[in-house]
Image 1: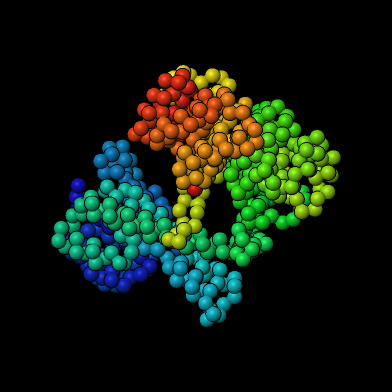
Image 2 (image 1 turned 30 degrees about the vertical axis):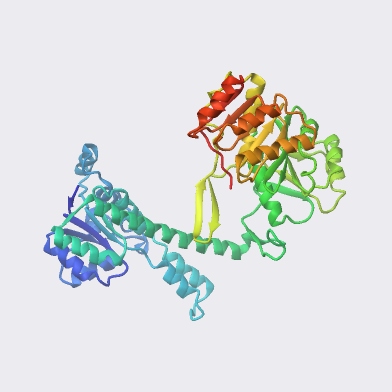
Length: 512
């Protein structure tokens, strides 16, 4: 749907290229609102302009920091033209409709380059003041508001688009199509995004320079330099041992994310992490029992691992753990006797958690082409669809829920085998799901763990029924998987034929 432009708000830092656009707006009898230097510029080229102060009935204050941050401005931009309530409120408060927003942003990156160049003659405080003043507030807000309301408003966020807008105005006699408004909005959001990234990068570098960047011994390998940007103090206290390395921190992060899944009263969980994968985990009534069961799941991989529990370490448990070489032990607390014993080896790292639940809203990963960001995987299952030959028993249901969580914390492709709330086999990081299952079964055989009556979790759907067939032949009686394969029926039919429980969750848990 096309919109006729009847009014425009112009407030720009860069004035070059603005003259023909302003004159065309004037020729088409479009009302122009403006601020400060832009207003003076427009007046000097002989075009009439209405000061924003007349719209807001409020002067520019705080040295120009606050000019457009006002309901009359944002109401004029955000008002929905087909919403009767919006139009009634705009009329009641005498808010006009603004159809076109031409706003660019303060030159933050250019100012940063100037203030940090060797030719800058001011002090560090002068440089910081100059940089901070070029963090635009009103500009991004108006751009975002106009872009959000693209169904009614056209937004131009860069002088690079002046020529295109001018051509459209002339050819279409002031009419802007919905597709054109949407395209300008997309450009505007990209401009604001890059602007925010530049500001964020500046502050992150400032944090590094002011001590929140901690050099690490090395990265994943000795030839790689590394540092921690941030701090560990909010998460845990280091009670003993050498400094945490890059790999330690990665495994500690995996351990804290895992332990956060078990926050119900009475749940005592102990887990062993190796290269971010769970290699042993169990839920038991006491911390000593949980440790013994977790270790039994894969005592070989536990060597040199990171240990974590949501309980306090007592002397009995400490004596059992003390016989194993491990890198890090994370616990809710340590008894005095347990701490004394565990501290007898100088290099092992002991961490006391300040809480047992840790959450992130987003996770990011650096790529050659930039940074990707995603929400954290917080849901364990959206549905519980019993699709097999029978419902899962109470014990199976508990094991399936446990296995599903464990599988979520294994690298894809992943399979977790659980029996009596103990991990008894796992396959992870494989290029096929059947290979992950083979690995899991071999692990259980290696440590003489009985799979009869065990359950299986898969981080993604079974593409064929081969996994349920192989699992059943190994003793598995219940399965949990997201479902979603075009051949789900093959697995469902097999489970019905063999009277096996099969749960479809609808939630995949890839972990790359």
